[in-house]
Length: 489
Ligand SMILES: [Fe+2]
Ligand SMILES: [Fe+2]
Image 1 (cartoon, rainbow, N blue to C red):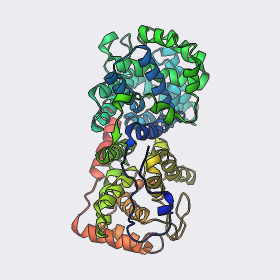
Image 2: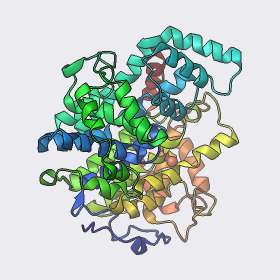
Image 3: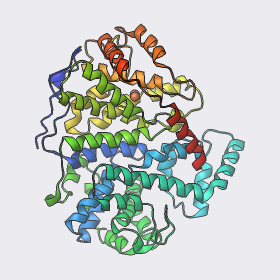
Image 4: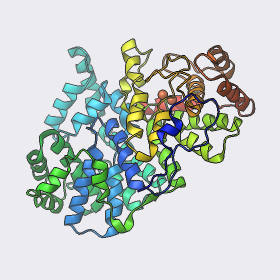
């Protein structure tokens, strides 16, 4: 497979003060599945799951589909539903953290290992995870809040995840069967699931497969093959379609299947399971949609970062245009801007949404996000260059930025464009501990840093762009999101 991507050496992370001639990505025969498989790691991180959870989930589901001899169209729709089942999960992260007063990653990871439909297990889980680090009194208070919200809150949290996940799948132009399967993933065979309480064959077959696969994967990764089979059998006819559980137990002795779940190269392993006669390739428009979709996933993580990535993209394209860069490079700048903060999915909402200024320790956690962005994006072979520049958006010319402490001799032009755009957008937004800043103040602060921290040419380009495009405030939208977070629960 040829990706056609410019090599890292062509960019070399050398200090460039003007637009390069190369591309960040070239969409020549890139398999859509390769991109989605690699980016599914971002969804694993959001869910507090081990890296590769979505890909292993897809291997399990596709093996079941093979046993059931599903037609090609169904297997193709299922393949993407299994990989992207957690697309909506960032949308309820803030709510989980708010409800539990605890790290959303930890709550999300642990809840997958219990049978939350059993009141005893549910109460025990809530008690051990609520008001994390708090006193017994604080935990009791939080338990009282949670008991009052009860099943209604669980349903709402699931509804947000399912609706949002299906919506983003449609944005990616995936088949309706994929969106439906993602929407049905939390429904249980006995009608006790969420969000609609569908029962039996009211739940789409692909949704039932996703539901079984995700639980089997979590138990397999935590405790091994026997535990994975046991949980399926134990919940047969309750959570899971009996026919599917029987198909899974029929694989008990398929050693090569279970072994495949442990491979280090899940992307390659999984690419063999996409129906050969329905392989999707990613063209330029498709890459744009992927970047837009994952930007929505990132921006949904916290009400305070709502719309951030899409606005950084708008500003960055405006800045790039002032340099007269070509439309192809402009397109790549937009994609890099949309994906620059994908690593924020790895930061707890307890920190992102904290009602006050983060401590030094918490800032240290926040400063890890460009490294997470790099780790996620470089999984996509064709995104290696884009990963390097997008993850350099907090670097400074004087080398005092993060996370690699690059300096002016190493910072590529795209990273310089992203840096000024990101700072401008972040300062124009409200934070729990400070107000949004007007343009004149942003300009004053940034101009003091011109040439030292941020690139002066990029700053002047931003000023020229701002002269003609007044950046609208997003404070109202942010506060509406905060209100929605509280009101929905
Ligand atoms: Fe960032
Ligand atoms: Fe950012």
